[in-house]
Image 1 (cartoon, rainbow, N blue to C red):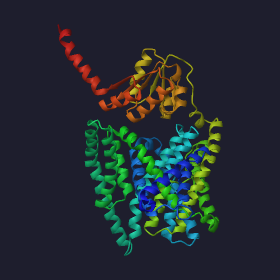
Image 2 (spheres, one colour):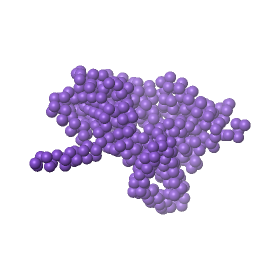
Image 3 (tube, helix red, strand yellow):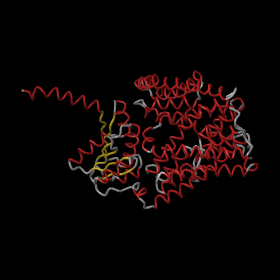
Image 4 (cartoon, rainbow, N blue to C red):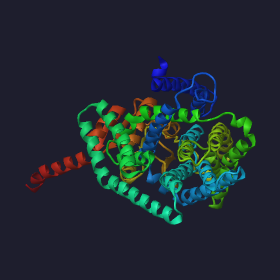
Length: 544
């Protein structure tokens, strides 16, 4: 009977194997992605036993790509990129160029065509978002300057991959010489431009409006359905109407949804399904891996792995050092980039569909990806040990300074609202500790004699360094309700008695932050309205 339900059996067996092997990988202190890929390998056509339906797996991987790219768009932050643009932008471009050249050289050495070699090199040049963030978090480096540079670097790589997903199909289909290719590329740019303009002009109004209308119904089920309908609908509609990739459509759907006041709920409600199909994406990629590549082409596999682990990291280290950053920071950035992941898988899958990459090339990328993901925690452990043991100025500026006082206020975020709040507290001689992830602000505060902690307030270590256990109140002044909610929930888990005052923009934020545990949520428009009414009501009395 099972062969009559290939979708059900492939999903069920894939998820069971992914859970078991992902759990084992976690216990071995490896990325769960290794377990998911291994699960795909076990149910793929190159190993004995149960064989999943490869056609079904391909369809599931397409959904996984859509939801992966939707998640990237939903969390895409121009602010994070601009904060480190001087190093991340030139560094990422140069590093990707050199890594692509190295990979192209390997492809030509293996007697592949120039097009196949270039795509092979490009697949080796981009790091995995999941693996990098996991490594930075595990070693408590995400909130350091080195962590910020690595994340900004990754954003540039993601943007480059989004562009590549548009250009590669055009170049692959180009017939009739350079003129025909240039014309087709120009027409593709026009189509993409129309799609982007439509999303920015129409989508920016329609999507937030639609989310608000659904949220007003009070149905969590409908709200979750609306998120997935928008993500999938925009992705498929973009492919059908404008002939752009599913990935690009999903990315812009996420970017536009981020503009909504309900983006925090969208991210939270869609996360379980995004995670599930992301796992199925990695499982489906694992099904493509022919493990015989280890026996049949061990030298090529070794060279490919060295390009990723040694070549990319060496180039990144040299570039960061050339931009006058310390050796320790350079090592962290280099370790963060010494692996490949989901975008590489998307590229090789696209290359196979377009008949650019042979099965041998795909096997090399997938096999080297697994090896690089296994090796990455070892590199991070070594780099983080150097970073933490260092005493130079770059490392010292990232050190967590622990507040020694008590009965104080913790202020999260030193933007316009946070600055004004802090000034009022300091003028009233209220002991106040500021938490901010902007190193320049923290350094300036410390030089001014103020207590400041560098890092993200969603991390337990940072909150404890600010003296959360002995604080009276935490004021969350950041404008992003999603992060504010996560911080509030973490505070209430660590110190339930501490009073939390948060900032919101509308009634939806009030409900969400209150649900997360905030004792009071202050909404700007409400406070302005109250003050204006008070002023009007008291004016006649003052006049009399």
